Length: 339
Image (cartoon, rainbow, N blue to C red; front, side):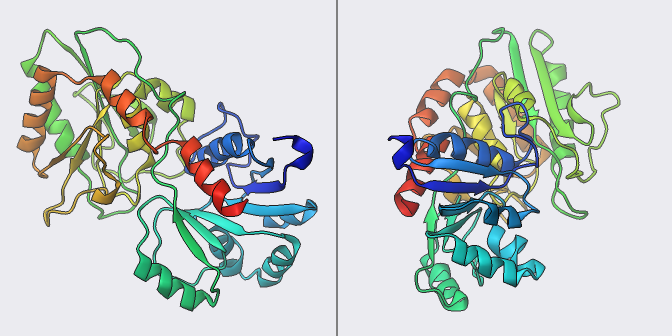
């Protein structure tokens, strides 16, 4: 499409840094980078990476649509902060749709025209939100669980090596946290396999660390949101892992699909009530995953099974890369809605 004929859109969101693969360190910045990359096939894309400066939207003329990569951005970052006058100006300034990314389509009063959601759409929730929002044109559209196949893929590693990643802790005190249970299970696993190099990596308040099972820290601590791990560091590690372990309840769990695309098998524990740590409607046939009861001995048995059987990381990547779980697929969905 000729640039002279392209409509202009703004992608509003990021981490207040120039968007490049080397500066990504948050969900909002990852969303902004890859949606910009693929939507630029259809639009002239302008980036505003400071989510706290929505007034910058008014600095650009002839804007067809704006997409917030911060969840419910127009509702949460403008209207709920008391900036109603600013929202009204933006609404008049933009010729097309105001959109935001969201994990879920929870019932609420929204000021967006469209929410692009990770999880499947609950139509009853949508209808209630239409009434609350007093906007009959309001829509909710699923874009899905996304990762980038050109970044997340399996690298060749030593056949006597088995690599495991333990996700970070929950953000709040008292929340379910299985890190210590994984630690206990893996201490026993490693002692049983002296001829295999079993590396266990973890994201904690010091960044990315490798457990030594002697003086590992933060096994029961909450995760500090201010700790940012560069996207490239995560990708470099995920290309080598066999297993990704969810440790706490997630609304969507973007890291999980990135690890899966890189070839990992997902370990998804239940809580004591039988509910999985991530919603089962995110799980599809092209993912390699196992749902596990929340006990140390269950974790231990599953690790033993997969170490002995092996995990076909190349096959896992191949199956998922052909699915709709990519940023390119999400961008195509968005284009059809806002064009």
